[in-house]
Length: 422
Image (cartoon, rainbow, N blue to C red; front, side, top):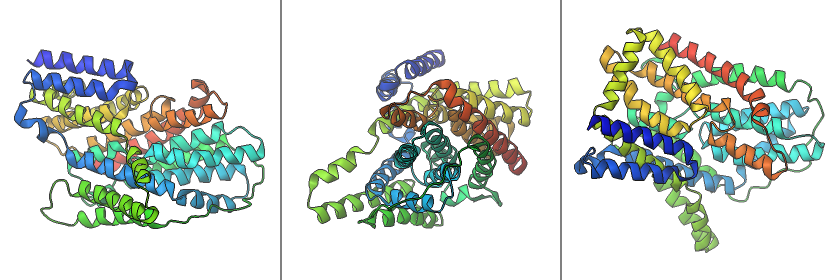
């Protein structure tokens, strides 16, 4: 049964790679095969899926759609740009601003908010928007690991390791992932400053975006505040965070429906939820549950330990840098979903706490996507925006920014996490 489970798992990943448009169907079909063959017992189907993670993602996506619709991010970008002296600092500030937003909002949504601003500025100055949009994308990916709600991978880690919102800031008396990511952001900003050193054209905003509805901003801030508050509640239900996010989204679309008396407008926000990713995750939870039940995860964990000779630094290094390379070519969501139980298994074999390896995995898998234009959904989205504007971006062009940005950020995180958690 173990061999069969492994073969199905490998085939699942092959099809996830060659059929990216059908990833959710691949994961669900694979999950169905595991259930039919009895690898995942029927009684465990609903327990292997982390419904807190699923609800958090759905609710956060919905709230973000309302936030984008309110035009508040556009106003914030306009105010920021108006204070910058030239194009170089506009690009840097937009990239950093995208990063800050992306720590609390999905990376793809962040790119959809900020990249068009860079494109419009480029049109006014008659310069290429390519480098600026790429900088926004890679900065968004970087900050996705900063908080519990910054990226799907962070939500996956939070669900698996039972981390709350505040644990990403301070955990067990040490600095959390938020500060590690900020250190990476500072060092990678030096790379951007060098790359854009010649862009010194002056700029000034003529008029700022008008925001007519501030309620979505209140919703987003309320979500963050309630997630922090919930982190202090003892013995709370496992799906508490998910209920917070989905309840606020339901409140948001209800208020919108009453305000505009238009049911169709509510439907548009529901459609903004990425059900493709949600179905993919449900399937992957069952698939990973299947290989765990079959003992495959334990075998992979033992292989890691054997290859490293029980040396924690080698295991940590292998995990971080293999995650960087793998995530440069495949989506980091299925990769992280698969590797989290493996990391827990490695820590169990060695008799150590898993947090060093958890944070190393998150760093490598999140930032590794910045190496290539296909390594992260935000990158694909950014290049899609540029393509609509008539700019076809080659892999080489992307990597001129992505590679140095990624290497500097990963090395910073890699060293800092080891220093804090080893």
